[in-house]
Length: 326
Ligand SMILES: Cc1cc2nc3c(=O)[nH]c(=O)nc-3n(C[C@H](O)[C@H](O)[C@H](O)COP(=O)(O)OP(=O)(O)OC[C@H]3O[C@@H](n4cnc5c(N)ncnc54)[C@H](O)[C@@H]3O)c2cc1C
Ligand code: SF4
Image 1: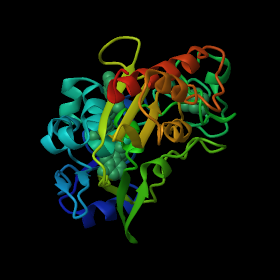
Image 2: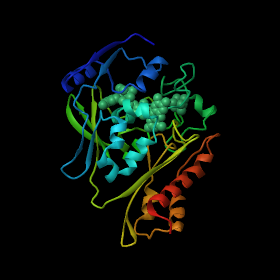
Image 3: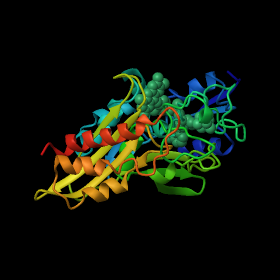
């Protein structure tokens, strides 16, 4: 591990000043410290932000939910408002990492976690994300867990977060605070596809801090849930996952929100699936037909062709779980 200095800040102003000077924010530390141990990350200054007042979950004026960036994953998963209004969020959190990690890790840190591509974490391997211009060992290497959607010729790594998939499905936004004030960016625009700059992973500007994630109020109540398919049933990242939220009234689907995880370089919205569902009557045939569109545009690699079919089946199964057997 490279030497670094450590400072704990008590106000957002101190945090932003430290961030502007190049300090690296640390919240639960469950992923940043690992990366520092492996020398993938070498920050000179760590800025502990856990003393900032970003620990609350509140109902917004418009009836949505705002989850503070420092709310622990376990707290968010257990919150009765999250569980009743957006079960897809609590389920995605509960299927993430382990109980011990969820007790330490924060919602803001979860969105910001970096890929689990093994070559990214091996400092002897070529990796454009870790070292721009060095190449991508995964393209010709073992790429079973990598992305089939949103990849580029420079990087094929997936985004590993589960809850970010639920946030993307629900059209959540990330609230940011920086030297120039506050702004809000949709989760789907906050996390960036690799293109020719895979080292640029998010829309944070220098010194900016995530303060919260806001899930907008949905005028029609949504029934929702999260399904995660992985190599073992706990303590493992998704091969594929599906976040589904539906509103059915009068026997017709009025609203559909669907996103996939484990397959994209970012949490992957499935608008073609959503469009196919809206205005239709729930049926087993409909779930199958809609899921056929889940992998539209997929470009599998040598070892992950299985993900195309697995994505469709994950999506179909979760549509059936949320929408019912007919
Ligand atoms: C063994 C293991 C298994 C895991 N399995 C899963 C899984 O199945 N699903 C899943 O989703 N995740 C999984 N994770 C990842 C885990 O959820 C993350 O480590 C955790 O959410 C990160 O949160 P943290 O608060 O500890 O972040 P930190 O490690 O403190 O920080 C992570 C990054 O976020 C930045 N950051 C943190 N807070 C802010 C903020 N407010 N504003 C700006 N930047 C910020 C930091 O600078 C750093 O770059 C796993 C992790 C481990 C170690
Ligand atoms: S897929 Fe991305 S993270 Fe993995 S080795 Fe290639 S450039 Fe690096």
